[in-house]
Image 1 (tube, rainbow, N blue to C red):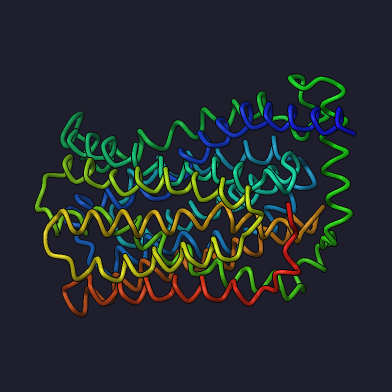
Image 2 (cartoon, rainbow, N blue to C red):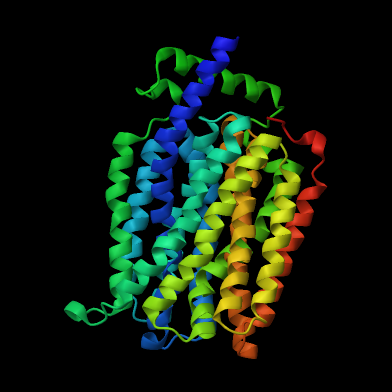
Length: 426
């Protein structure tokens, strides 16, 4: 038994070293393609005559198609395999993202953002589903947090890179925002072909695990799935009250996540009056703080086996800080509050998905994770539009950010409605 436990631990450590950095890279590229419209807006809105309402609707419409196609995409992934389906997703979204350089009107902006959501639907829940097939419960929050630091790393890297690409304005007859879309879109296409060769479906296919490690890890995952009382059918997952409660909790996360992602450059620009490149550098600071917080909180959640309060307290910090950001005067207070808001928000992600995946197994996991993510991502449409409409009406960010912050706090409180006895203990 001791030998088996040690073998499983060795297999998990190898999987963490091999898989998490690769999946992390894929998600960095994914998230850059999703949020680069926020930096493009620094030039694109004026060049194409987009109002705050036009921009916020186009930025958010991505999530309507993403939600519409999310569940069928993840069910297909579970049936045909993560390797082929994730490769398909990446190649198609990369082409659509690069195609954003051809936008000339509001209608074209809406159509391509809708197409981008349809192309990318299933990617994130597909990766989460993939991680449940590799990491036991006790290691899952750390693995998910490691993968999802890509969200904040995309902000760290994306800010300076996007600012630099915007400075190419006029090179080869293209605007800076057009360079931004094409340069950040095409890497997804290349990585899609890498996925076809490099991503094993499950431990039994990993040539970098010994046969004993393959058996030990597969056995551990199978035993946990049987003992946790997971929902294994698609119907069971879609009709489970806990699944819908988790979806309601998750709704609050993308509300703030994408309100921040799509409006952060303009909030920083308004507070600092800096150049586009300087705005990109300043925008990286909150994400850098969030990256550290995310890993620390995810590791502590795994060590203690506690999920609910890690989520709730992180939401309270993130929501309160964002609500105060709109009332900050000067670039330093604004960056400090934005850093706290981003750190609190990011710290929710590892414990949340560890909690959510502890309830689901088999095809039920594919459908349930997709349901939680798709319902939650409606918040990705709501958040940016709240800020956009309120700013259009008030010419200020304060009220919109306060509303978004309050929604995140509410989501954190809602997770406490899940009884502790229903939470699988690592």
